[in-house]
Length: 68
Image (tube, one colour):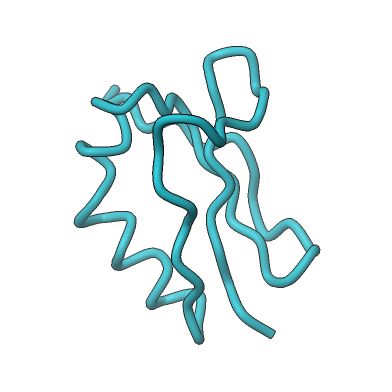
């Protein structure tokens, strides 16, 4: 299986316009490393939260990109 991110707006709806589709990654660690490098650009593009999926299975969902 491959891992990928789903981009979400503030209401939890999926964002597909205005952002490039999520890359796919061979492992959870690779996906998380990519997000660590890319979250600022995603936030600037209007992505408020992300969900990590392995195939269709949700690993964790609606993780905010806003720093606490």
